Length: 318
Length: 183
Image 1 (cartoon, each protein chain N blue to C red):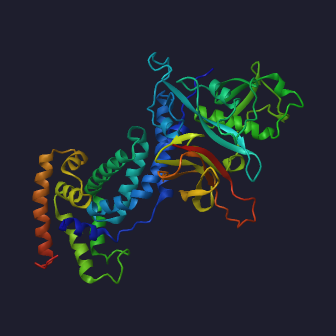
Image 2 (image 1 turned 45 degrees about the vertical axis):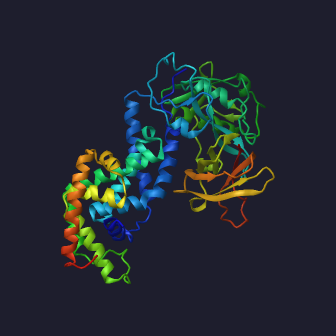
Image 3 (image 1 turned 120 degrees about the vertical axis):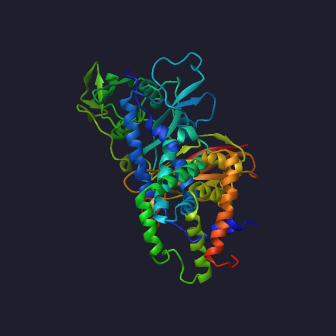
């Protein structure tokens, strides 16, 4: 027996420090802000890349190293693709809200044009939809701290509309802000001039993003992507603002039976969305098939409120 | 088309989740490791907290939870060493020494066990830094010689020498503390 090891373990067995996650994230925020600012000043651009043909997953996008802008090396072209966090519309107990879906663009370098193409395309998750139709958003540029989005003139006519024009505009703002990595206001323009109305709403001045808790679903899944094939185990992660940071999840079999369940936690829940993660979910021993991973907010109202927010993904177990 | 700048949201997303998971899983264990190295729980918590923040910044090059844990251990050891050099920590350590047992210590813990805990932490503090680090990594974390050498950035031969000399010194200190009582 290792006597010194036993003595050391005994010496600290009563050391049970309280978690200090709020301070931890404060420290991360300070350190990240410092680093981000330095990198912008240094002219560096981080391009999140994705190996072609790989599963679309957030952890892959974040695993890449920062890269310089400029023409990509010929050898890289086509071997990896930029990943975009595109906001789409889905239903929630509070009406339509935005969900973020990670999607691969056509090229290695991230561009606003490709993000606009994706926001006007059909989302991968069948529960989501987009308020933007192909041909409405023509291009975007960053000019003096404002993102100018060129729109088709048909959008500016009276009567042009979608069920929720304000949410459509937030869908665009959140998406382009994700691409530029900064919360820049958005100005709709046509032929270089601001347009007065889009979807019947006044748009003559640049528009800011609305607070997350007003426009986003209060829970969303970043990973796995829709119809990801898993074997043995998988883990899920996303963002939520759920009572006391409690994020319940379930895995449902093709017949709807709950075969796995648990709770993820986020370190906070007030003011905005916070990351949650499940850790490994063991699916060895489950029959192959299309399963549904379900994550929801904790309903603190005891059933009296509008009910929990929910996001789902189809997960294919091999 | 202006080329966009950073993709901060995406790049940081997974670092956040990794940090979250590693924090939940290893916070307490790493604080205990730092307490063995530093004696002072407050300073130990600071060191571990700072290590997690540093890990988050480095996530892109770590990516793998196992690598991240190795990085965290190394960071905790290095930061503990720096903290010990810091005069403030030494002063706090002295103040703690004079204080009553820490609040975490249950009143019903047998006196012998309490004494033994203090004796072990005190004896570790008496050792030269390298010896203490090697002993804690070897006996508490149960790392191999190779892992210890990598963590501390020293040769395996040095690990052996520190382990041997440090082990003998620690046992002698503990024997003195308890006046020959069998620990």
